[in-house]
Length: 302
Image (cartoon, rainbow, N blue to C red; front, top):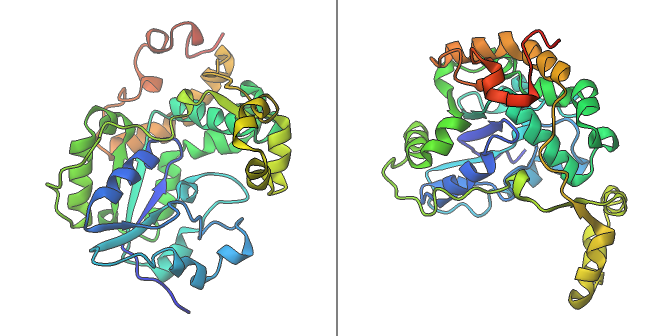
């Protein structure tokens, strides 16, 4: 087997600015990021042709003089029955690898995760936010950071993890990246360009897939259809291929209370481990009503 030599993995979490962080990581001359960024190689539900070591090795063929090599797949810490990754599998091939885990307020992460799926039109029931949160376990379970972290800790030493909080990253991306560079063992003083640029922000996307586009995407022919449409006519096809963005979701009080209570113990354990105060995330602030306004009446949810 042609097993590539890699030094780090960005293991998640979805909608925590991992795309922006990886774009900045790529700027460093001593760091190589796989192309594409998210190969999902260790995820169970990937196409067969993307489960060979030959294919995985091909993602790193562009390596020249870089000092550290890696990839970033947020699904490594996403809770979906089709893609839940076994950390022991990763450890069996890369026992000394460094793991980068990005997290954010678990409730805000759920909102962004749903919005990202809604834009893509997947799954069908995702159009109703309240139903999606209650019935699609991927949303709430992916926000169980302590649970995912401990799944990996069974096989990797704590010194192999670097945790980045979205809130800290947004305040000072340069500082967050300098600390990350130091963790990876590359020059921490490298000067980044456009460190404040935000990539893949769901709330800024104006359109989402229409039912037709969703069907074409499931058939694997969407790119071919787009190429067949002459450029001057593409704007006339947009109403058939795209719909206006659904906007930020609105919580029902009882669903928000349920989600916060579901995640409370997990979140507080994780915050404590990271030496963050219990109220670092507004989901667990002393006065949730002042944080969420009309979206939340009280912790009891009545």
